Length: 128
Ligand code: HEC
Image 1: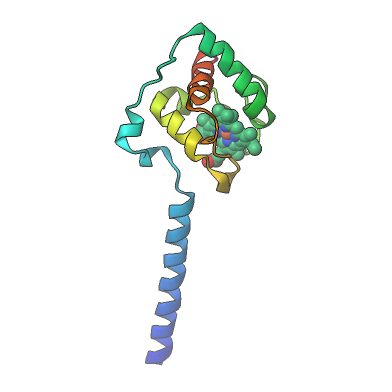
Image 2 (image 1 turned 30 degrees about the vertical axis):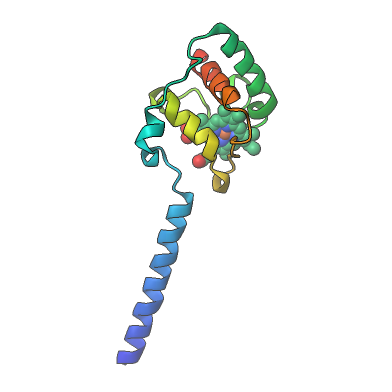
């Protein structure tokens, strides 16, 4: 009796540990963004040529999932014209683009030149 109770406890804590580990892996959420990344500013903010270049980056890399006008696919690929995006800092967005969220289908864009990440962020700001 004692033995099976402690085995149940062990199994339960293993299950809990596994689900905590899972949460840590999928937990690329905005509140975990390091302060120094959150505070970064977009060196290309508001520049018309960056908006134009960002529209091309969007067309080449983002359109297939986030759709025309960044309105999302109505399912798990979210609109990028939302309060969440408006309230995020440029640094938050750049951080998220670098990380991606592969578990939920968002690729990492860390292989793009950094300037292209700022360009696409400038573009997203222009269509909010
Ligand atoms: C293969 C499909 C795919 C491509 C291509 C893609 N995304 Fe995503 N994106 C997603 C999915 C799915 C999510 C939701 C991820 C999640 O739930 O955490 C997402 C989330 C995001 C978010 C966070 C939105 C939110 O409200 O949490 C931003 C910002 C974003 N993508 C920007 C981009 C940009 C910019 C590009 C192009 C450089 C891009 N994505 C390309 C699938 C894609």
